[in-house]
Amino acid sequence: MIKRTVLVLLIIATLVLSSCVDSKVGTYTAYSVAMDTQAAITVYGNNKASAEECARLFEQLDKLLSVTAENSSVAKLNKRGYVEASDELSYIISQANRIKEETNGAFNVCVYPLVKLWGFTTGEHRVPTDDEIKAAALKVASSSVWVENGNAVLSEGALVDFGAIAKGYASEKMAHILKENGVGAAVISLGGNIRTVGKKPDGTDWRIGINSPNGNGIIGTLSLGEAAVVTSGSYLRCFEENGTLYHHIIDPQSGYPAANGLVSVTVVADDATLADGLSTAFFVMGMDKAVNCAQKLGVEAVFVTETTITVTQGLKKSFTPDKSIEGVYKTIYLD
Ligand code: AMP
Ligand code: MG
Image (cartoon, rainbow, N blue to C red; front, side, top):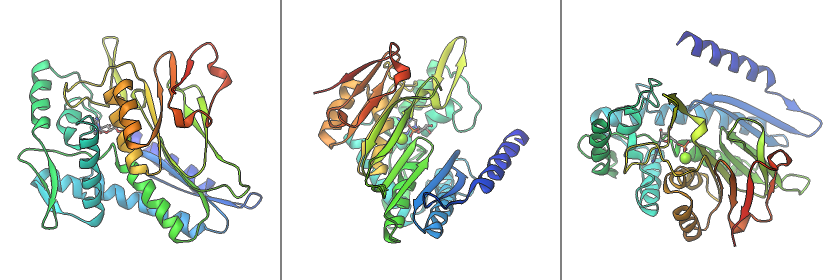
């Protein structure tokens, strides 16, 4: 706990020092730390106040959506089975249920009993017994969340975790605020969630790197206009026991971390909430089903395994593999 506090203080100190106006290129970056992530909101032009508004919003949304903070709306919902639904919570629940349906339940915010069982979110990782996993998976299968008479409501014994969609929602909301405030160009970066706004003032595309799952640099770059680019990866939160790696993206049906050869999935879509939900879902679905789903929903994706990078048709011209991956990954472009 002390270590964590010191780390957060160090990050904040660094960020305060580095929050500054870059007069040469006319950008300003505001930072905040929430949702276990460092947010960086970079705006072009004289838009410092808007960037700071977004940074504060990130902290406010964390207070609403955090599954671990005792007084968040989501914590209250999990404790009591209902909570007054703000517009934000109602919208997130409707989007979560929509994505669950579109992905045949691969995405399921009611997965929290399983996430908890494996120790993700609490940090007390352990490999549960098969019986424990079966029981929790059964519970998840019969769980649901909905909005009724202004309240968010859970089915008997259900528990929700919006961790797979919250950052996407936050970045989408920030993008709308920036646009409303007349910001013409910005990049919102919330960990693996990138949301660009407008075009760069010089008219060129944004260049967004996809991180290497091994932690060494990037595997490639996407050149894009306004878009949401969200990555889910097994390497982002995991633990090892007896030589096996267990990660945080759970297949709600089996109750185990998804195991289909994927190590990361990046989704490119117009809407960041959808992109965030789908990157998690595609990781669970595996590449073949995910490619079909992406086509159906009109989104694009980059799928990474230990040896391959598969790029969907609409990103053919946007994706450039990094030189460093030559001989390590084979890049496959889908027709
Ligand atoms: P992301 O990094 O967006 O892929 O979200 C992963 C987080 O979402 C995990 O740390 C869990 O809290 C939660 N989660 C894990 N599996 C699922 C799933 N199948 N559907 C929805 N949320 C999940
Ligand atoms: Mg996600």
